[in-house]
Length: 272
Image 1 (tube, one colour):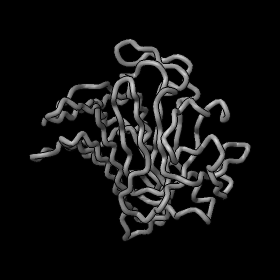
Image 2: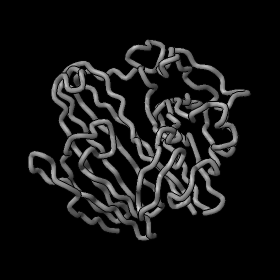
Image 3: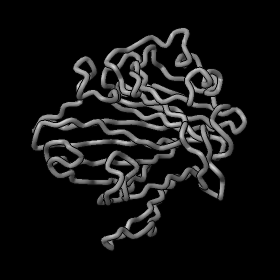
């Protein structure tokens, strides 16, 4: 297991950003940049500390969000640790503390395509362990209620192709699923499988919600190895508290008080 570090770019102020590659002994690699960390503070440079043990390699990213940055009160100290082990599991652990009462709801917005980024994800099989979704209003913001997925395009309780019902939710999926049996403990909440490649990904989390997004607004983008990414070329499964929670008292709270610690854990487990 090892970690490589190389230059990624230079910010306008002259600070350098780096790309860290975590490698396990089974051939799996994960690239992470300390510019944005690929979480909500995506236009800032995070401090980075690498780590290595007998069975994991890790990158710990830290950031201090000043009082009222992005409109939120409190000086917020945030840490996100990415760890890769030889079970082909990518662990994402979040921690945060504040000096004023505030809201914290962190997630990871990575896109996945199990077919080596070729084609769309409409032929990927998806399971989400959720009986309900948070209903959206006309502006695509949760209206505060939860509705059953039964007999709708949002029913992924039994694995089905992403493309099977996507025409009924044009332009595609972008909605929060309410995790079944949420308790704050680690649960398997979703699984993706691509038959052609034999690859699969399981998602485990301590969070109460999973936002499903199917890259609905990607027109044309050149990605790895010169491949062109288009609409529905990837899938996001963003573990989180429900969107717009601060304005919805019935949703699980995202309030963090001084003296408390925000913690969250998500695991992406890969098999082939």
